[in-house]
Image (cartoon, rainbow, N blue to C red):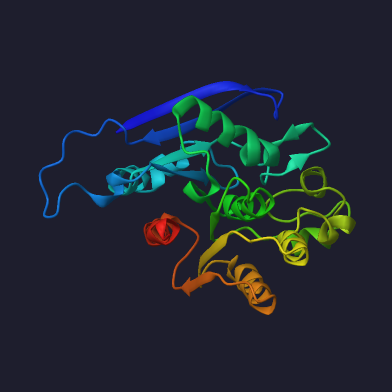
Length: 268
């Protein structure tokens, strides 16, 4: 199992940025199993981009989840970028285009550099908390690169932010941060920072939506927001998977659902 740390110059971010990668291309010979080698290694490697939460870093998935074991079990390359507290959006105020970075540049760079599949059907995105919101945004907006997305306890706070006025914020950050990150709160509900807008736009254009998987713990303060998005998808007639089971905002909830989501991602 190769674990790789890459720092490179990002055009989208106008500076150096990093990502970690798990690449199961050097596994030792496996003992014989009934029926031959593990089926996952009889097909091309798949790619999964994993997004961290607010105040997190690129290494969080390696530290908190079973992603290395899952990559070796299912023949998946996992890419884990560091994206600071960006909510994975392009920021006009700073010129740091985190949405473009993950949606286009990072996956393109990794495909070229590591020989990964260029096909959307072989490429998926997943995130927890802020990263769950990011997975929705990027999976919907860049569905030509990502065929399925997984939102784990997503910080779907766009309605709350849209109601903010200066100088108020919330317990996490101040108004200035949210305005710089999401744009003018008064315009947020009609902007691309609202994943509901992206869903409605694709439906109106007759475009195929990515597969969507949502999971959130019922004791998580973000659960009502994820339930609301689940209800929105149902109202729009969008087929998706949604799970609301006992759990809090932590790896004890996210890791089991990562393990549940990967077989769903790999369904043909």
